[in-house]
Image (cartoon, rainbow, N blue to C red; front, side, top):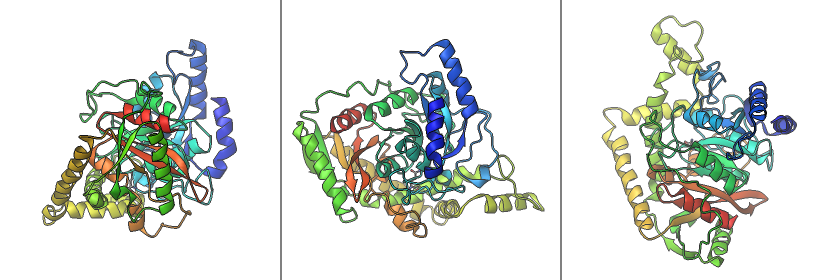
Amino acid sequence: TAATFEDIRSRESQVDAFLKLTEDQALVHATEIDASGIDVGNVLSGIPIAIKDNIVTKNVETTASSKILTGWIPPYDATVIEKLKSAGAILVGKTNMDEFAMGGSGENSSVKPTKNAWDLTKVPGGSSSGSASSVASGEVRLSLGSDTGGSIRQPASFSGIVGVKPTYGRVSRFGLIAFGSSFDQIGPFAPTVRESAQVLTAISGFDKKDATTTDATVPDFTSKIGQSINGMKIGIAKEHMGPGVDPEVKSQILAAASILEQQGAIIEEVSLPHSEYGVAVYYIVASSEASSNLQRFDGIRFGYRAEGATSLDDIYVKSRSEGFGEEVKRRIMLGTYSLSAGYYDAYFKKAGQVRTLIIEDFNKVFSDHDLILGPTAPTPAYKLGALNHDPITMYQGDMLTIPVNLAGLPAISVPAGFVNEMPIGMQLIGKRNDEETIYQVAAAFE
Ligand code: GLN
């Protein structure tokens, strides 16, 4: 643990991955584990891990990188934190992110932008920017992020590491600051497929504090790693290899697919015809859910309160105006608009119907395929500042990851090569609750 803090100290001024380090508590915890003896049956015993700052941590300030939560010290731990602590993992700090997980570059943090560990002039991806860069730079081996539309997989792709969005309901959202509640999932970042599977095994499972968790049994997600993939049927969706995707990214992905083919996998073209509507559906539904979830930040209950308010309404208006950043306000306005009585049928309801078509597309492909393979993101990481004032282009960057959240499916991003000397990721999408097969095939490729 002490060595991890040395690594963090030597790299942090370059990557800016952390909002807060919890060195004192971490060293105490590590000493306790030393005293009681490392639990050899438990792979995470004594292992340092970094946590995205939208996951609440008892007695450690949690802000989701928003000014409106500055100074909020949660009195409880998220379920994933309780699970990690009881597995003996050591929390080393809270990582930077796009405010309330809204963004794809890390630049929407109210505090600072995190840098890509491969090229400090480029974005690390987002919204789990700090969790990705802390692992990619070698500050820590493991971290947790959250993924609502791609926020684990896309930064994993941009940063050359492994990122997993589990099946919706696999991991408890209790203590995850809610963005889009019907999409949000917590998942791991790691340098290798096996370590990712180990962390996911530790944090998964039914939780009575989150009614959307499934009671499906949690296997050891490493159990199929090393098994042959001979005969496995893998689809490549033609819509994932369309004109919006960088041709060099496509050729790396086809090269990756042929490595799996050499091991006996059967690769076939498939179609997800409604996936082109994914981004539009997501920005209506996720923003609607966000506008509702963010109502609780009123200047009274948590964190920041504006000075000089003259009435209760004024406290709300001033605190929210000053406390939320531009992108968060944009989403709140979009969400309240699409939920409002006059527009509900045209937007929110319609988006829900198209979401069902997207889910049915996946069901059809999975009726005779084990996995879907494709790029995680249409491009490698771009320069800091390049898309700052172009939210629509930024939103399009999630076109390959968003449909997976709409359908609640599990997916991994695993490093699959380089384009212009920057890493790119291959996405493998699996059937509901079949993370084991994803890890098996990802490890065969790795
Ligand atoms: N980039 C997407 C957004 O801005 C996804 C974010 C996420 O997965 N949290 O909403």
